[in-house]
Length: 335
Image (cartoon, rainbow, N blue to C red):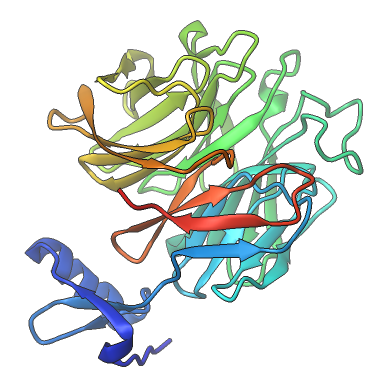
């Protein structure tokens, strides 16, 4: 895919040399819709600050930005389907299947041509929910990221059939292993590229009690996961080579209500808190033994759930509102 843009219609920014070099390589092969000038500065088309989507009752929970196709992909707690949203606010169905009762977190793994979706059932989808799946379902649906075809469905809840389940969020490591949080059981699942599922970590400390437990999760290139627990705002660091040796990341920021996470740089983590109607920008200078708040974006009372990267530096927050709302929004975070 080739991209042609006028510099008069783009925003320009200088990046650190190592990031600029990576951006040059990416832009040259067409993965990002950007231009690189002779000085190594990267330019991207101007992106909207807010996209309002007139789709009542979708109640999206997850969002990912697809740089190649220039669209946002959104899940749906109430309908199950995956939707595609363009900058002009248009919404089309990207993927659907009867097993998609409620789709929650998404992860777009472009290098492997995959879109991964966490599938659950808390009764929000009255059409597809069944007594057998209600509060018992934890699934991972994997789609072709180009055409939306379902390539694999993995039943995670079957690993612990006698427990309540709510598959919530997903991250993928460098080898293509997916890690999925369960908000109703103190579990992080691992699904390898061949679709084999195991319990990666199970510990009472990960439980949310009668509330929501584990929620947002991201992979850090240094070889660990960062995982948020909603009910008490705990942020965990989980080494891939020793998951039982997980530790708490100390912080000067109250993270109660933590939901979606975005690792903006290896030292910068964005944390969405729905109950605090805010996105917190955390910074760590000690490889995530501790962190501190370096900025806050107040969303207002819109029940923000999660956040996604667009271009190299922009982050967009999902405002799902409520199931009966005639629209939802995707809004650029400004700190």
